[in-house]
Length: 157
Image (cartoon, rainbow, N blue to C red; front, side, top):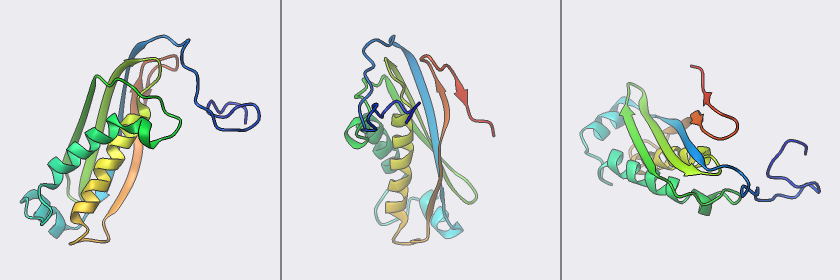
């Protein structure tokens, strides 16, 4: 179990003590992609789905999820987020979701960005499933993080 910060010497899960870490500006960006067919994308663009405005509903769900990550992922810390932005781009084969999070804290916001992107993508699925059950949420990933001891991570294309 060496090297796993959320596991103690006996192999039991634990919350990391971040009390001695410095408070720094930390930012993270995560993304996901929802594969959709042309007809579903047309309905999303035209805002013609029975459940309502897909993109705005998913955006709000992603923001809410990022703010509540500590309630969903057991070993994460509650963070006083300074900002959460969720953007969606309708592309040729689906919808790309991006969630950006910023905070002044002792621990990073990667999980908040990932949770925001994931829940926004799941919300899109929920809203389109009546017309396309075969929609797929794919490529949930951390694209960028900065701050803290480990510095900057940027995913290469």
